Image (cartoon, rainbow, N blue to C red):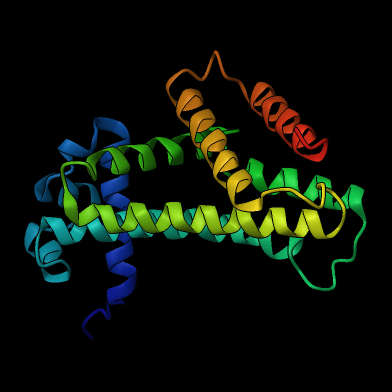
Length: 208
């Protein structure tokens, strides 16, 4: 009996091969040949699931975005659940934990961040990747806005907080910390990243 192959699972496996090659050697080395070898497939098999290299790269970037998004949504759903209540202490801790998920606080998230930065940098010269990068940034801004609206509603932020402006400022802070910690992990250890995030949230609560 011929082996039944799940096309969706095979596409995800090929995308993982792209990420593995990119993590070790850089995205420029993620050719169809190298990816096929990493995945243990013939090039023809890869071409069976992806029309060309551009489609493979776009799918891989979206798969990476999905993984990041799934992880963060687990925290977001708990924080933003309608029946969570209004315990400010609990809400503050949950907010910090949610936002910390955007930061490279361990090796897995550091590699994930490095890969995301690699793809977003490539989007400047590969227009097929730009929509995914833009969508991820828009989703980040939307999530920041929801978190800050919730904090303002429960009294964790002053009533006159400009949520849209602060959402942009918070997203920029997280992006900057992620970039620095990915490039210079020894200078930006997890403890320091958490301290900076905590100080920012304290300043927001104080209306600064």
